[in-house]
Image (cartoon, rainbow, N blue to C red; front, side, top):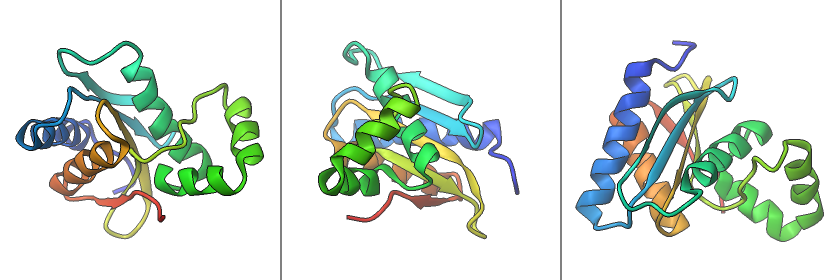
Length: 145
């Protein structure tokens, strides 16, 4: 598998939202991007706040831009804030350096895309992304602390 299928992207979105409802999370926006950074699937629940879609896409886009999950980007921002600020400028602001941006890989480790979620705490956003990726039978790479 070298491409992220629309079917897999939809499973990620649907399962992430189902996870959020069962866990009692705040309304989420979920964006799935392919390796090119093109939007593959998206949904925003009723009640999401303004700009959650852009934040979700920024988490996924940032992970793709740097090739690491946004949890690792968050760590790097704490250690090298000037670097993350510069990269954010280079990518037109499409980089949100907090957990919730998770790389999607196939079982062999090949990059397929990324999912970004926004709406609850960053840790809860990431947990919903992990649930969605797992349900699609793919491997999640959220980054390391």
